[in-house]
Every structure is written in structure tokens, then in C-alpha cells.
Image (cartoon, each protein chain N blue to C red):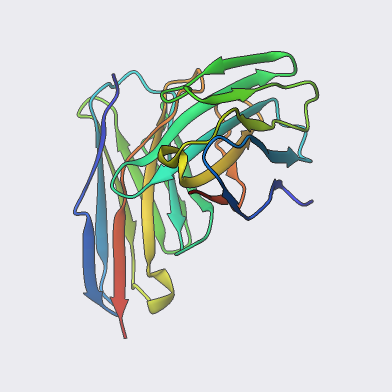
Length: 112
Length: 111
């Protein structure tokens, strides 16, 4: 099993550009989430999904969109990149609420 | 709003020492608590998951305890090794996906 796969691993964007961070899992997990990790602030939840077709906002959703058309994939879209979105982004998945999370290896995004 | 605190922020110990990492949370209505380790530039690796009905979990040299009523969890590492050097994070799950992470304890084990 590959687990949770995130692409790309590194990305540099110019302010105002848009892009999609990809996340795929092959464990048939219902729950998937996106986090950003910033120095001194820990991991903060951006968006999450409890199943295909169902998404909801986390703590810091502004500037990001998500959709969940399949169980396997949960892409994160940056609509118009800003320097404040420079961060490391992690995708995570879980079988059910009480089974704990598996994390991807992250995408390091720099917005200049 | 749930707040999760990990103290100390950094810890340096000699190899072989037993150590305890602390995690405290403000809202005791949790579904589970998970401990992770994160190596520099890497993702999070799950260490232990404690469900709300459990008091502790063990895996090898690691033992995690949970006291919901006092809002505390500890991660005990026995006979520490240089390979244990990493940042340790705790995460509290209320059961509806809005997981809250602590900011972590950076551990350095000195040979």
C-alpha cells in the first residue's frame, strides 16, 4: 500500500497564481483532511471530508477550496496565491473517527 | 475552542535516560488522542492512539497515558536513543474531524 500520497513535494508560486495540491489514498478511508503547518503555530485544519461528496471547513479555510468526488482523492485548490499561504501542507486520512490518522509526506509551498 | 499545549517546547537528554513528554488540553470531550513524531522536513508518523475509554497504550519503549478528567496525556519513552530525536506532537480528536494539534516538543537525545 502506498498510504497517503501528496504531489508535488515542492512548489513555488507567484502571487495571484492558482494551483491544486493533490492528495490520494489507497486505504479506502472515508475521512480525509488538509492541514497547514507553520513555525510556532502547529498544524491547523483547513478543510476536511467525511466521505465522497461531503466537505466542510476547518479553522483556516479562507483562500482554499476542496472537493471530494471520489473516496480516494481530496485535492486542495489555492484560488489566488498570497505570500501568507507560504507553508507546508499535509493531507491526512482515517478509516473512521476512532482509528487515528495517516499523514502524507507534505507539500512545501512558497508564494513569492 | 479546544486548546492543546505541549510543555516543554524543547528537551535535551543523554542517551539511555527515561523521559516524559506532556500534552494538556482544555476540553475533556474528546474521542481520542494521538501521538505523532515528526522528523525534520518529513511528514507525521503515528506512534500511539488512545481512545477516550482507555487509560493507556503501549508500543515497544513507548507508553502513552490519558486522563480525560484532568485534560492530560503523557508520552513516556524508556531508555532513549539518538534515533528518538524528533519533534513529538499530540493531537486531540473530538470525534467530528476537527482535530487540534499541540505545537510539539522537540526532543534531542545526545549520544
